[in-house]
Amino acid sequence: MIKSEHLLLEHRSALSACSACPDMKGPVVSGSPILSPILLIGQAPGDKEGIYGKPFAWTAGKTLFKWFQRIGLDEASFRQRVYMAAVCRCFPGKNPKGGDRVPSLSEIDNCARWLHSEIKLLRPALILPVGKLAISQLMPVKKLNDVIGKLHQVTYHGHTTEAIPLPHPSGASTWHRTEPGIRLLDLALSEVQNHPAWQQVCTHR
Image (cartoon, rainbow, N blue to C red; front, side):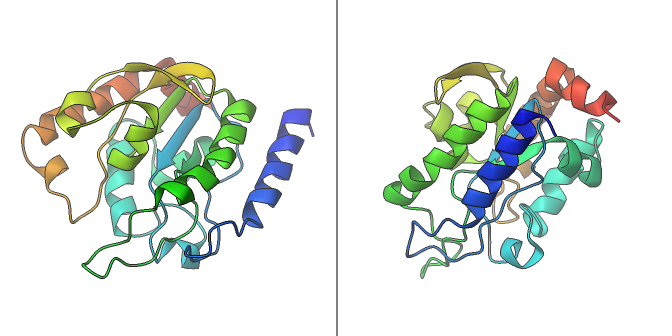
């Protein structure tokens, strides 16, 4: 086992034991511990992801993986070739007003150290932030229309790289199902498809 793989497994072992946020509901959820040139960052797992032990395991995931299948990777291949992380790794619980609770700033700060370690280990050539909370960790975002559909140069946790934001695939959101969201999503997926990091993972066997 090469050193970076060993360090990644050590990182994942420590991450899985994290209990820094008392209001979060475990278990910790992460994707496959793969050394990938692409890092996907979601918001936080929902109530089903802990049961299935993987990110985007329910309805939103079905939509997300349909997007990636359009540009060359089915769900199984994506999970095996792209490192899947999140702003927060545990289920925040339900919002009394409906939907999942948005993680607090302190919870986001607590979990940032895990992303920092992953950036240091992976040195990703491409980051795919999914949803406004994840996108906002990398760049200012008032409206999705302003950032989706473009390739962005970013510096994140000290690492300068490229990012292609994607909307959250939630069924509760109409953004990606109405214009201009449909057109901007198509542009974003085209940017992903043409990126050298995506082409690298698509040709990996």
